[in-house]
Image 1 (cartoon, one colour):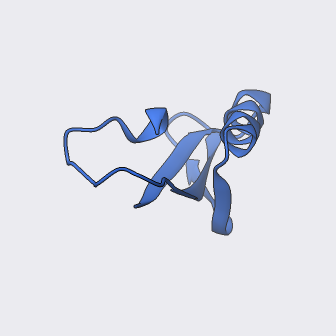
Image 2 (tube, helix red, strand yellow):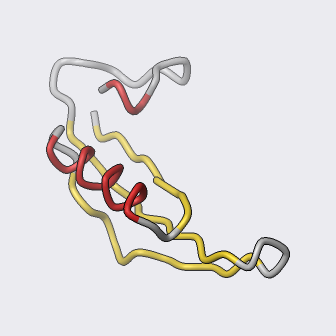
Image 3 (spheres, one colour):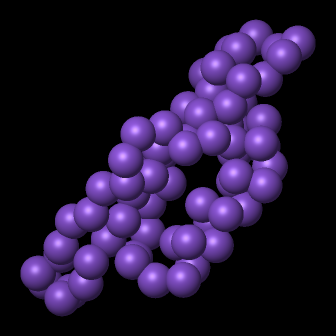
Length: 68
């Protein structure tokens, strides 16, 4: 089974730590990161897609993708 997640968060070290944690749990980067500016908050937000192949499991919409 191939699993997809899209990580998002403010453009700060906490976002980088979330992506790093995912990479160390076997997830792989998928595509380029994205950025968007929230003018109301005067803040930049980031997004990064990650994918992972999980053997021996079938996809179920109720599963928690981050726990795979």
